[in-house]
Image (cartoon, rainbow, N blue to C red; front, side):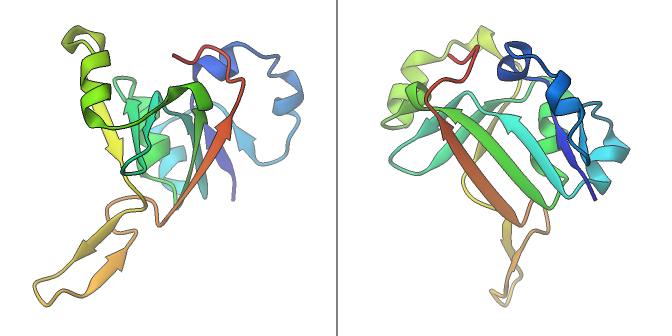
Length: 139
């Protein structure tokens, strides 16, 4: 079992060599590796305080793979990227900024016609959010 960390501004701003020596941590994201990974790690662009929603520019397929295929998603959020609500986010975004925006509000949940709730069917069964005061390359 291993963790898969998608390329992000934070990783680009640090020396990755010490991280490469961590057993079970991989950086080369492929569909096959993401599907078999226990943990996916990504950096999200914003977090909405009123709903707890994470907002991620998922134009890069690697971001989508690590945040949707592994059983556990660890999302890194810069504390200065916490916005109060959706209207504030929409005022800040421009349609040309991204081709694909993912909004994540908790682990994957779905229910059948009898309202039987199942967690983790269409995505991670667990979401861990790590807030960082200094997250290189954040917004």
